[in-house]
Amino acid sequence: MERQGDFPYASGDLSRLLSDIGIAAKIINHKVNKAGLQDILGAVGTTNIQGETQMKLDVFADNALLNAVKWGGQVCGVGSEENEKYTAFDSEVNRKSKYVMLFDPLDGSSNIDVNVSIGTIFSIFRRNSSVGDLANINDFLQPGDQQVAAGYVIYGSSTMLVYTTGHGVNGFTLEPSIGEFCLSHENMKTPEDGKIYSINEGNLLTCSEGVQTYVNWCKQTDKKTSRPYSGRYIGSLVADFHRNLIKGGIYMYPGTTGAPSGKLRLMYEANPLAFIVEQAGGKASTGTGRILEVKPKDLHQRVPLFIGSKNMVERVEALIAAEKANA
Ligand code: P6P
Image (cartoon, rainbow, N blue to C red; front, top):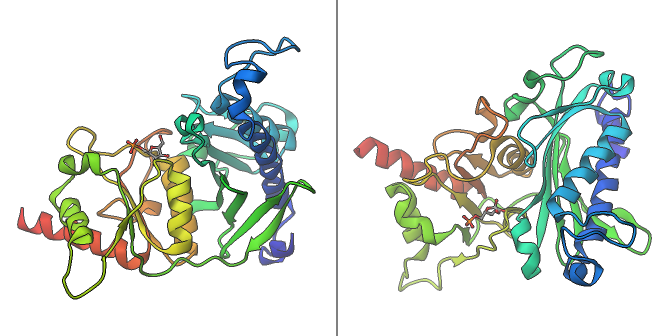
C-alpha cells in the first residue's frame, strides 16, 4: 500500500492483486505445513469425511491461486504450470480487469514427501487485448521485461513472500499468530559476488564446455586461499534462489546434450526470478543473453538459466562466449 504512490496512475488494482496472491499463499501454506499428516488426514486420491477428494498438493495450490485471483477480480486470465492451456475468465468483472498472471503453483513439489522447502512463483503482465474482451494468448506471450510485478512464496522454516513491482525487492514473513505477512526484508539487494554455486552436478558432463570449465574453476583448490566455493543444491529452485539472493551465489540449470533448452520454464520460473534478481542488483542469463529479453513462443517453453550474483553470472557467460569463439 505504501509503495502505491510510486505509480502515478495506480488505481489500487495491482495492490489488490498482490493481496489476493497473499491470501492464496496463506491457504497453500496451511495445507503444505500439514502435508506430512496427509496419511492421517486421508492419503491423496482418497475422499475425506466431507467426501472431498484429497488432491495432489500442486493441484490444490493451483486451484487456490486460480480461485483467489479469479474471485479477486483483478486478472482476466491465468497461465499455470499445471495446465496445458491458459484460462480466460469470462465474468464481466474479470473481462474488465487489466492484468494477466502466470504461475508455478508449487515448484519442487516432489520434495514435499521429504520435508524440503518448496515454493510458489508468479509473474504479472498488463494485458495486450482490449479491456472487456476475453484474454488471449498474446496477453501471456510477452517478454519478461514487460512484467509489472513478479514474486515467489517460499514455504520453509518460515513462510515468506518476496516480490517486486519494479521499484526494488521486499520480503514479507508470515506471522502465523496474526495470519499476516509482515515486512521483514526491506529493499533486498543480492551481493555482486558470492561463494555458492548451485547446479545438479550429475548433469555436468552433458553440459557445454564453458559450464564445465566454470564449475571446475569453482571447485579448484588454490594452495594460497581457503576453500574457494561451496556447492549447495537443494533441488528446489525457490529455496536455492532465495538462499543465493540473500547470501550471494549462482544457480545454474544449463542446457544439456539431451535437453538443449534445459529444464526450467521461461514464463513462470525464469522470468519472475529474473525480474526479482535484476531489481536486487543481480543478473539472469540464458548463458548467451538476458532472460528478460527472450521472446516467448510457447506458454511452457524451457530456457537455460544462470541466475544470481552479477559477477558470477558474467564469469560463466564469458566462459561460454570463449568456448563459442574457439569452436
Ligand atoms: P533436477 C523441481 O522439479 C525443479 O523444477 C526445480 O525446483 C529444481 O531446481 C529442479 O527442478 C531440480 O531438477 O534435474 O536437478 O532434479
